Image (cartoon, rainbow over all chains, first blue to last red):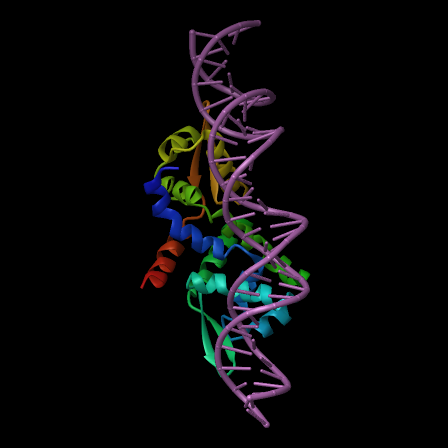
Length: 96
Length: 96
DNA sequence: ATTCTATTTTGTAATTTTGCCAAATAGTAA
DNA sequence: TTACTATTTGGCAAAATTACAAAATAGAAT
């Protein structure tokens, strides 16, 4: 793969990769209106809390969500609302 | 992972996965204005033609692009222009 | 029909992703 | 300080992704 091309698209590809997992899309849809902690999200999704922590970290690293500390908890919120618009648009086209 | 939640987000996750590779983003950006064949795309990207064929197939399966046969060639075109808008929006937010 | 040309598929090895458990951190509360 | 709670990190095995080369298809051109 040509290196210039690779560098041009690597960051965007990383972002899409961060969004390419059911659990991480669940996170995004769940925190779009109300903030939740790691434990709350792991309970809702019925997965191990350590697994949920890693998914949150992937989204955080890519600046798709942001954590906010309140007392002992970290509450997560969505940073890129246009993700939801894109899912709506793409689904509409693909489904028909 | 809760099965209902998994099913809710599986299709969207697949779409994002299809978009999560530099070569596939290169394809999308390259064919947005002008159609190209597998061989042309593989030459431009400097990768094996069989590899390029597989990348195109992943995008095609997810209905992100569409192939159109002309004589011996198959020319690919973009089916979901809003992908580009989303990349623009997300990059703007993430980069600052 | 035979030869080219374009594309896809198969085989395979290297790399990456994923999820659970256990252990480690970090910070709160008493 | 000590116990408790929330979260993250390390280890590891299973599954998925990726790329190239070689073989197989499919169709055009002569």
